[in-house]
Image (cartoon, rainbow, N blue to C red):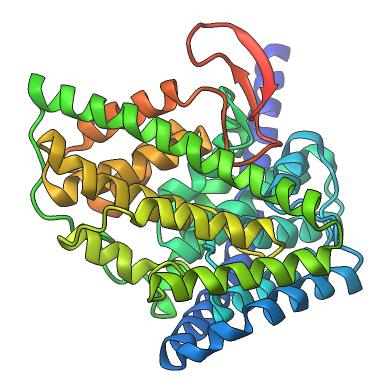
Length: 420
């Protein structure tokens, strides 16, 4: 009888925990979903304004200085961006609420003046900081606040990008490679779904799948070899992207120790590079160019230029995400190299988008779900193979220096080292 009572008591506690997190996650999904939707509209406004008035890119140096000054005034000049969110989940480091308005305004300003950056990485900071503030306000302990931060990350990513499955798994997978935070599965899934539905109600993410790629390939021995070969090459591209992102800020700091001088110089370099290229294809997120490449356009040099533009922008102190530039780089590379391997143009771009993302973030399950939500189910086994090869052969490089590789990519052994 005592055993039965203990079991009932345990089930009761588990039920209360479930209801608690369902309620918390719904609240966080609504909060960060609304903010992320506003963020989406803000970036769309900035992009449209710059497209209508191309001369705005001449303000790049001023925009960079303004962003550094904003962070300095708020005593956040040494903010680590997305890396700080990863530490907040893994080690319960506090996230300051001021991170949210700072990343909101500074990313919009980056897009307005033409810096090369994304928005989904910024969404992780936006959602994580808001959720951390809510967790502190309602008195959660350290362990529960970690789950709350993951809820915020998932909700903001989902509302901004329109991929709830990807968002939920990414929040659990990106922190410690080899360890999935399954305790956060229900909260992250609920938060991501609620935020996505709210964003849809506000007029976002009406298309499914998000990108149209045309012809795909059936699973066969030949297509498997083609996908594996593309995955190998994508691993090299992801390493190049990560090395560029980590090297640029070090070079800036070595040559120009003053952060304001770095921002002005970085803005000037991006401006000069834009004038040299002769168009603004590589300024901002570049979603329109990405779509044109998947639809059939080939720009062989685009993947290298996007890496260069993004490294010069974010390394100088501009703010924004790295994920869309990674996807742009993958699409540009895949649409150029895929046909050389016998892969249909759009399908090659789609596989490379997922595979370069996988190699750069070390998140294979997220990359697979990203493929599903961006492009649909056809060809999914080949996406999995391409991403798996890229994940394995990209070594221990990664976008986020605070990301920990807990298990080896080659053996079933514990290594616990930070991404390079």
